[in-house]
Length: 431
Image (cartoon, rainbow, N blue to C red; front, side, top):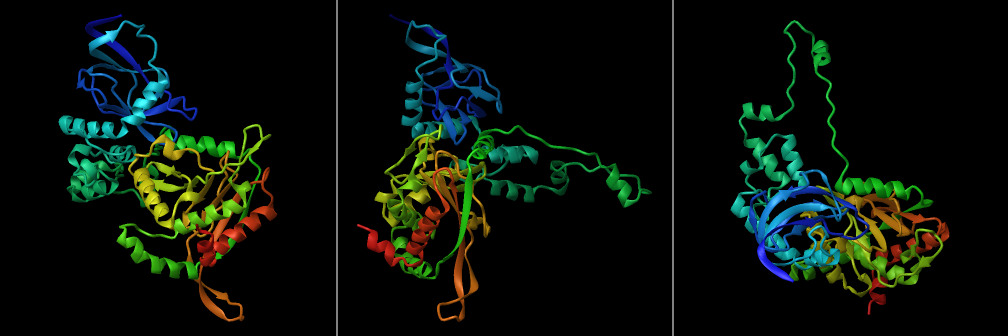
């Protein structure tokens, strides 16, 4: 039975998957009393792993926002209320709408929701910016509406805030920083320092950092060990130089990381144990055929690990293209939950930030992870006993000792390094 009338209805935060029970409300994209259309983005929420937009399911007017910005919204709890002008079914409004339907709508209309958000932002004058940029603006007492954004659709980036601060008059710039108490002229410098108020800033642990705290705490229960080795890259660097023009023709940027990923996939074919997962009770080991390789990406919101799926079926060019796409989406906060789930093994390229050695931590249900250090030219002795300059990178593997022993990890690492130190071995395995 249906009826034609105006009816207020509560809308609930859907189950987004991965056992998520709550999300941080990052930003409301509408206000109470505002007219919205179906599929228009209503708010941004930060799950354990990614920024997700919640769209409207119907046309109507927003009558109430139940969760304040910065607070936690509970799954299956009311998120906002709408007055719907449509023919509606006379069902009990207290029942949350189907979680499966809501999740399907979010995933199917994600691109359209972003377009709707951009359109809504242009109408309302709302500034597009990531949560990290908004937090930085608050700390510097900057109104984002005053900043000229250089990103897509006028998105304000961290660099835009830096440029804006540099253009401020000195008097106003001083007002954006923490005030310093000036002591009497007769005071000594030490007395002036002693007179400064003691302050302590704090913020709740939410979003990606909260997830990291939870996962790393759980990882302490895993007995794990680390193996480090030197990887010589001279031949691989020469091959990269020869292939770079080929990738340029395809408008793709070639780095060393696609080689590492492809070599890892080839090695997993010979050592399937490293691609397995252990169940929560540590009673069953599950061997996984696809090579879903997670690659850590540094973003303004924290460390994200998007997943390159089925690497065993991808060419070097396809891996480079997918890596570029996922890295760009990660830094823009546009990764979907699916793109962050299901990794069977992971790589962390700490060398991109200048680190030489790192001991990575295994995250269940994966059983291994590698940290790639910064490569550099260092003196080493060749087979003839002569000292020469070699391109060397430190590689550190950590493994779940409940599943993998030291000898197995050493053999695995040696095979992987052979593919990279002698790239022709890699091509011999490609079909």
